[in-house]
Image (cartoon, rainbow, N blue to C red; front, side, top):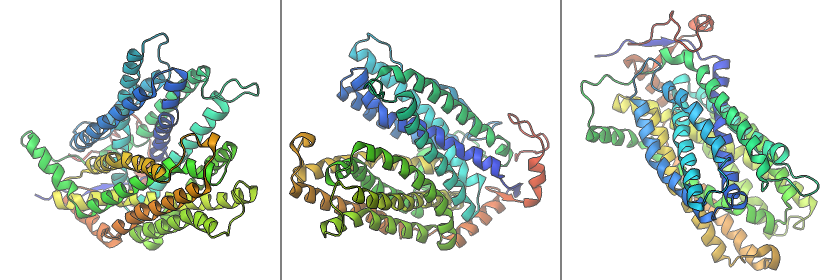
Length: 508
């Protein structure tokens, strides 16, 4: 039987801003852990770095199990608060408390006890971060179904994530762990971590609640899972998962994401080597560049919807991706051909800064286009399966990327070995021939993996017409709510923030 078409008012700008703000909490947490965890527990607490690395690897395996489970469960969860919001509200306190505790380990404990303490905090953070981030991301396709509007929403969310990264870097280096003129302070001084942990924990808690409450009034208009006559068996659940992820367009985007993840792992691992040893940058210059890259990323988030509206997501993503590759490899090629200033000079740094800023903008625009493509797969998969599976699709994409994330890092190590890069390069120096080998290997990896991502994306087939047809099909079947601009006034009417508006009757 065909369900009655549901109607909803447009999502206002305030709701979009509150929704997007949730990404800043995620970035504060993710960047804090990736930037400081190994350093803190090894250099400050005194834990063996192999134990810290082991904890991180265990957390990665834990994520690979938890992500798809939470995605599938939230897709099929029924409650008065809908499918996603119960998980999002639940996440706020545990993830914030665990983030505070991980930077305040007890003193005087043995290595084994400290390892257990750190691992417990880390797994708690990972679990409840998934409770918020995955359902929150999964809301995007339902909040905005418009082809171009969806890209704008995801770009806004990406922009808040970039601001979160900048906030973390500035607060760490200039406020909580600032290096004093007498040499005290800094990231190796334990005294700065309690204040940082408290401020970050409160920030994460507040932003998660604000972001979740900001979309609360949308609950009546969100989709509900299908009513099941019997509880599905494990076999039935696996069949549903396989049927969903077998979507051809999802296979294209997921494969492209995995290829790009390998390339990103290589570049992330080697960028510091290229900057310090090949180009001769100082650490102060690297800090300046990191801040400017955040600003450039915001411009990329602004640019992505405009490119998508003019060219479409596939062609737009291919265009910005190709430009970013050219901008990444051009400085090294020009230098090898003798067209760049001498390495280590201010003139070279100025030119490279210009390349880096434009590269980051186009790279960010490409990443947003890819995420918007995944969001469009939701409707295509729902038309094929009769179920909305946003959580499963986003979690599967994340799982595939995490599964290969270590491959890029491992490949970077092999590239350094192949180039005969010395272990104590700051002391013994690096042979120019070695640097040349490393630079060309770096260029080759970028062309291979980042270019391979674009070649894969060229097979993506959900364009504007296909997406709009999918949305109309789902609206007619009740799996999507049709947007009615005339209901804007009703949406703006006062409604209890933590409760469902009694004037709006949720779909049964």
